[in-house]
Image 1 (tube, rainbow, N blue to C red):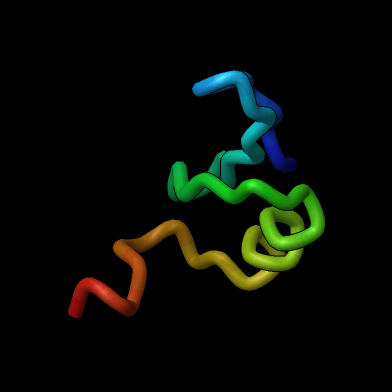
Image 2 (tube, rainbow, N blue to C red):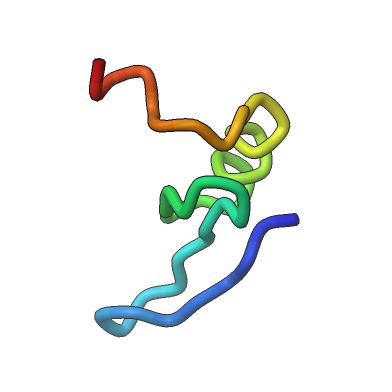
Length: 44
C-alpha cells in the first residue's frame, strides 16, 4: 500500500516496501506493484 506524506508543501507518495517517493500516486502504485523491496536496480 502506498503511504501519503506531506513534505516541502507538496503531497508525496511513498512505497512502503522500499521507501522510494513519488509525486504521483499512480506512479507510486505502479512501482509498488513491481517492487521487490530490494535496492533499486539503478544503483547497481
